[in-house]
Length: 204
Image (cartoon, rainbow, N blue to C red; front, side, top):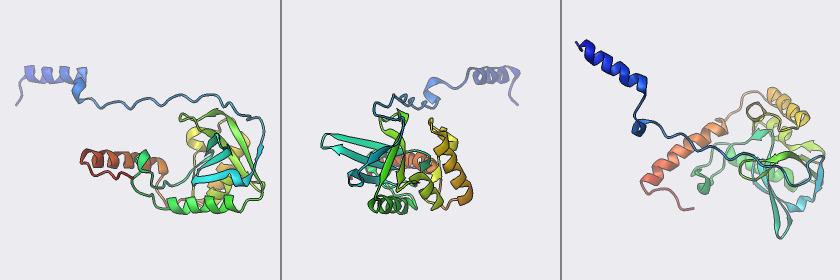
């Protein structure tokens, strides 16, 4: 049986906490969002020919040869597609389906409108809602059960009416057939770290 002196010593060590070498490294803080320099008070028209789909919740608008605007679509988080440069060595189930949904929706659009939030995201991308022929794209993809609503996690970004529409669509859509994309990204970061440590992470 341990002596009283040993028990006291153990209690003191617990009170002090783990040694620095054993403590988990705290994740680096994300950069703060910055103000949106482009117009954001109302919807702006976008020529459908200028829109290029990256995945189910991100598009690029190439306003000119020297001006490309990355838009992270608000209200939604779609399953991920493979991007090895972002620690995503594998597709998430339903990621390609969400990407195909976006490609079809924007390719057939006759009229597209964008309403930007007043801030960029921490990576410098525009945050905004897009309308396809008058219909909120975020509502469309949530209704198709190919996106998780992100309003609960991130708030309405100063666009409460649009956010409320997404929440209503998510309530009607019911449970989703895929893992939360945020949980998938976290798991893939661990997988990527393990693969890189062993020199087996894909180059492209």
